[in-house]
Image (cartoon, rainbow, N blue to C red; front, side, top):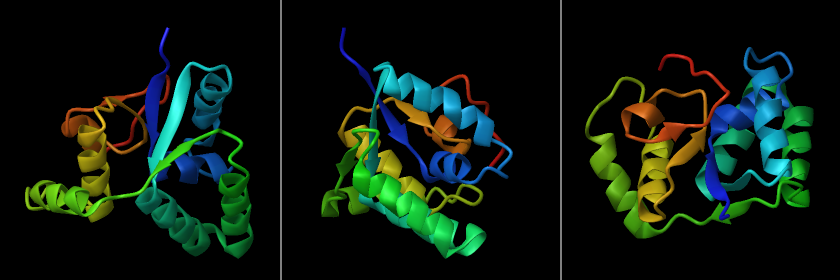
Length: 144
């Protein structure tokens, strides 16, 4: 049986690293599923950049370094996709839809997921559902 590739979004990473985040406890079941081989984790260099910056601003340098070391050790055996120029161009088509609070990084994620035929995402961001992707359970989502 082939593993389902699971795209990991910055909202998932932020909740994972911040034990005060309202969704922190929900990330544990997804990590368990990854460690048990249910999912093969995938993300992009844009998501990792966004997450490191977000964690540093919201939680401080120590938490950002903790997350950076977690990534560098690659304990999840995560595939990191480098964004192509064509992904940026496709992302622009999503971005001009002008959905409420839609970030360009989300648009790039949509473009990469479409290019790689990824359907499942670990996120707490409803924009992914609106864009046609399946939000991995059991994690509920918060409104965008």
